[in-house]
Image (cartoon, rainbow, N blue to C red; front, side, top):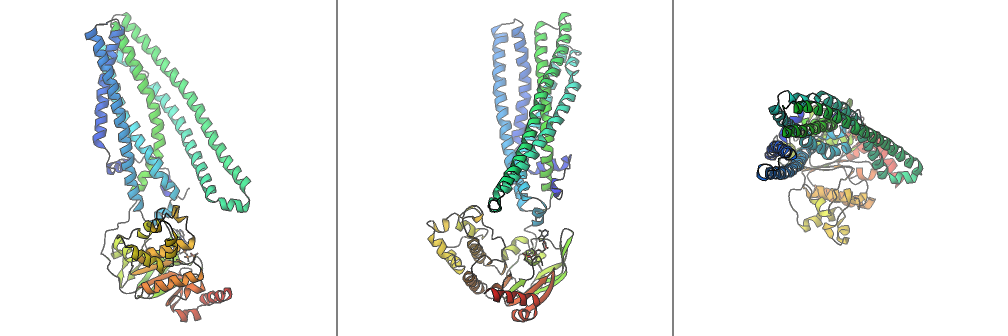
Length: 579
Ligand SMILES: Nc1ncnc2c1ncn2[C@@H]1O[C@H](COP(=O)(O)OP(=O)(O)OP(=O)(O)O)[C@@H](O)[C@H]1O
């Protein structure tokens, strides 16, 4: 958690928060509507209180008191319902707009950002944190203004009875604020603990349900259920503390309210007894005092919500402050001619250097395999060609031109990349094959691509054909089938340069041979770079590069390197033995 830069506690950065709100296309007109309705409600509330005071003081004139009282009561009710509705609508719209903005930002962030930040935590930024922020704005910030205005209207009215009388309402203010502050801090502390305990419980359960197969095969069910129960107990203890503190807060606030009422009654009684206040004013004064007390006790809740949302504000505004990848800036990449050249490339993951001054040539129009021991930098090499990470130094060139001069969008369109994971989305086979293609190929073309990778028979066996669902992340497919669809998808893209990271590793021997024959045919005359791990796959290459510890150990024509490089010789010998 400490390594997670964006989740560092950095309270108080409200400049970033307001700049984020400024970009969120907030429903300003609705907010203004809400503020206007609240201002009218404050005024109407004063009238309602005064007419009800007159009524209870015995003035029961139908047109002078009773009808206006009904009118203001109904108006107040209608306006309160409308303003409540507007507030909720504003909050929902704000949720939507903020989520849209943060999601757009999130997908445009560079890859390293996701590696430095836990993706599961990022999900909760877009869901829970944004809800807290919308709630903070609509249920705390804006009501602070509206209730402050309502208090001001009440105080103004009371001061119109007698200037000094107003101070009797204000005198209890510091005590109320202090109580709100202390209770708010306590409640925030416990709420924060509950959130952390619940997050730990959720993460623990999610991790274990994802690894049920491992738990069962290791026979650790009892141990794991004990771990889950410990987390549940911790969560229960935090909830218990919350119940006690809330239970304590209610009588404390009630006692503070009673004390204030005593002050109000004693002061008001004196004014009434001396004839400074009429009976109607005395009742109205009491009504205003009760309203003001209830407004002030609401500030305790504002404080808690504010403190709870502060972390969310900080986390989300830090995401928004990150630099996005600029997809459109640079030259448009046409069909690259010429090989790939690494010119004194430096690259490190954090403080750990991987490539230092790496020089490397990958010939154009040929198939090049990158081999080497685990951790030697093969995958990273492909990632750097695809510009998934920024270089620390040096340049990667294609056809003599620095790849960073091309716009990312056109560059990545020209390249096809099948990664180690063969990522698939929950959708249909067609959705996955068409994903990001920017065109809709005919079924014949889909058939051709699927036949090339030996998966057409599988598609034809599906009652829904290309419209058959593949399950969450392609869960209803085998690893080899996912790889075949991923290669088919890359071939449909018709790339000028194809990168494959162990893209056939999960296929059987015959399957691999068929797929490689198709790749050779479809990519004839174009550049293919792939990571190979076994003796069979390595034979598909024309050219070989052997990496070791981030350096090129050997490179050259396949047969020459196979004969001379000790790592390749060992790999081939092991491969022969396995046959
Ligand atoms: N996201 C990352 N953050 C930190 N270090 C990383 C990251 N990705 C890779 N590395 C490190 O960089 C080195 C090279 O990793 P890379 O995945 O490129 O190796 P590889 O040769 O493809 O390995 P394998 O054959 O096991 O897939 C390794 O030491 C690895 O631990």
